[in-house]
Amino acid sequence: MTFFDRVLLGPDSVEAYILVGALMFIVGLFCMLTRRNFFGLLMGIELVLNGASLSFVAYSGFIPVGVSEGFDRIEPQVFSLFVIVLAAAEAVIAFALALALFQIRNTVDVTRIDDLKC
Amino acid sequence: MLAQVAFWAVVFLTLGSAVYVTLSKNIMRAAFALVVAFGGVAGLFFFLQADFLAVVQFLVYVGGIVVLMVFAVMFSPNVAQKTFRESSGNFLYAIPTTLAVAILILATISGVLTPTKSEGQAENSTSDQIGARFYRASETDAQEPAGLIEDQLALTINHDHAEALNDQNEWTTLHGRPAAERPETFKSHNLPLGRPTSTPIAELLLSKYVLPFELAGILLLAVTIGAIVLVRKETRHEEEETEGGAP
Image (cartoon, rainbow over all chains, first blue to last red; front, top):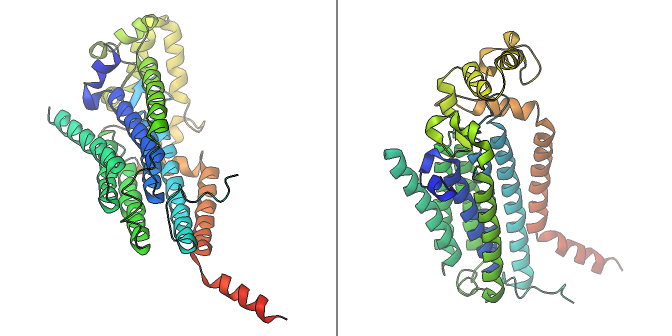
């Protein structure tokens, strides 16, 4: 069975979850690259983090063939928990920056905030 | 069958709303599509039997980040109207970059997850999962873990060696304590279907990952203080006044 045959097995194959996580990552990357609004950019970042987090947790629902003892399926979930914490912290600081920027420059258009460009 | 239908519905809902977030012209609609995307990821976490993480995902992302985002958007007028409608026009660079990353990621995961021929023996040990490199965690829990080890090792290694490894595994635990001393809740991290994951997560957070846990607490404190400092306005006026009034 090839990779995409196994994706079609759906919830019983790790490949389907990994593919969904990868696609979310790619869509979020495209969002980050094309958005002009600061908040749109942040939505892209959240999508990227969620895709990576989903890939972590996907491996927690499955066990590699040939490995049965000593494989800790909870550990990826702990990593994912830290990803969520970091995403929340990043979002709070980014929103605070966006509001502070809006008070000074009256815009959240990231293409017009280029004071540091030489 | 029902699981298949539910799974694909959740997947298309998640990816569809992610695409809508990327292409929408209206920032509020994008924010609400983001709610659906995060909820879909929480649903996939439920499919993976990560119940605690699914609830945390819902609480933090949907209840926290998206609400914060909507508040931030509403507090800054004319954000929603103008700049969100037009994209940066960087499609010339964005599309090739995204395509390159997409090809790289998809080629990597399909290459890594496709078994090679040398692993044929390991695949045959789980007869209904031919070609799989991973199988469901709950499938092993239905059987005795020791029996499974025996099955798999017997195919590749000779029997005496397998028995020796088996004895070793019975007495080697996560924290090096013998199995008999451990309470029942610490018995196995490979949880059977329906067992809550919060207990082993808490145990890991307070033993192996206690330093990152503490650092995350410090980070959250710093973020709270930083956010308050960043959005405060009055300090600047006070400084200007004192500087102006001093001479």
